[in-house]
Image (cartoon, rainbow, N blue to C red; front, side):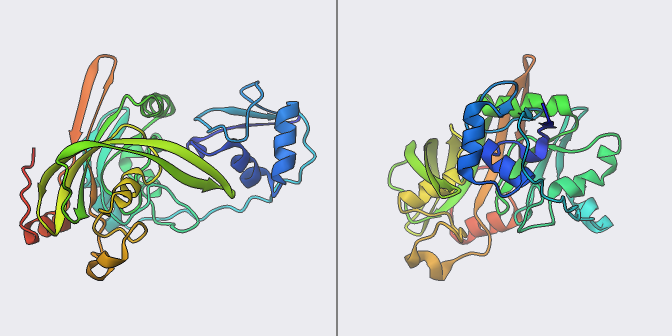
Length: 304
């Protein structure tokens, strides 16, 4: 064995072949697949496909290593001001030994990337709450989506919570305001959603239960409970039925573009799960702009 790597929380859910290209260099896809087939690259001591999603603490071994490693450029971390730090600490709903639960603001990324330096992991990493540890992401929430987000305080909690999400033992409830009157008052949205990874088409089944809380001719307020966890799942599914979410710049229909709201009206409202037979239930109050929009459209919302 020539080289070994351990997957950290920044690489969770990344495809194995993509991780190899990002970490090692611009290696042709064909060469990666060949080395995976031959066992020159193994995941947790076993052969694996390039499409395999990585998990926290996975071990990648290279038994043949004649690639040129990319020189690592140290990424500049976002350094929050005291004002930003205080504001985000004020968003904490729960703070215990293993994790925090926050009511995430719209417009901020969970972790840093090529398009955004300002992110919650760097912000909370500077908080006194994490002075003896570091923040771990355990699930995703889109940059423009507000609401409940869980951040683990240690590796073991991160592993446990990540596995609960992966096994669909975490139950999430979202609120969304979409354009138009949704005729059916409740039901299921079932789609085969398409995404592309390195020009490769991937089709994934997506299931979401929905209930109309109130509606009029202009818009509808929905409660949504995703069963699967696909990227942009709720946004794509509502777009597919002709009722895109208000403020969605990506999944939108031309006839609604003139009345585009600057805020995405999608809020992660509730979350519940169980650890060692102990039930955890959390709720995040809706943002002020969400409530203002509801009132302006004369939609009723019982904060339950």
